[in-house]
Image (cartoon, rainbow, N blue to C red; front, side):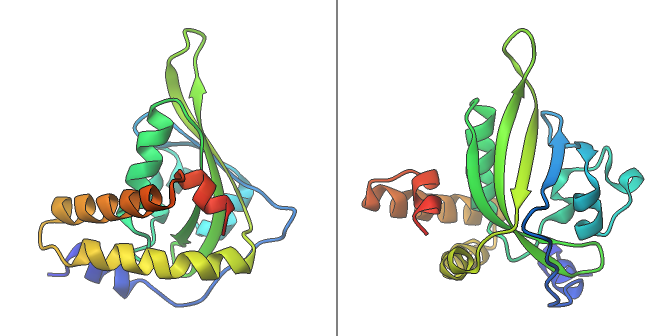
Length: 178
């Protein structure tokens, strides 16, 4: 039986998909991360029809080379009511991949409570991607060194927070400095 990482690796083509500079990938989720809206650009790049995406966890496009600790930071940030920017590698249904520069924000109801999340993703510049890849590889390596996934996530998260703390910056500042 394949473990999650092996199963993810089996579905990788090493083919990178791209999209036009003027295109935006847009999706919305509920508070549990289940997709409630996916625009045509998202559907095209991810290789899914709208009916396959709606109601599914946004992690349906999670690439196995993307460190889980970045998603932990993302969810902690947006669930606290703040926005976040991040470089993310996603996986298409057929195993292709695509990089995005994501801007994720909470959506608030009339009562001021978070009712969901909204994400706009742009085509990233190659320079920052080249700089973020080694960090993501390092974080992923830390996660994989632990047989317990929760311990691996905690260790990589602490490493990321430590790197930011040493530099005296937050994650967004780090991302915009690449």
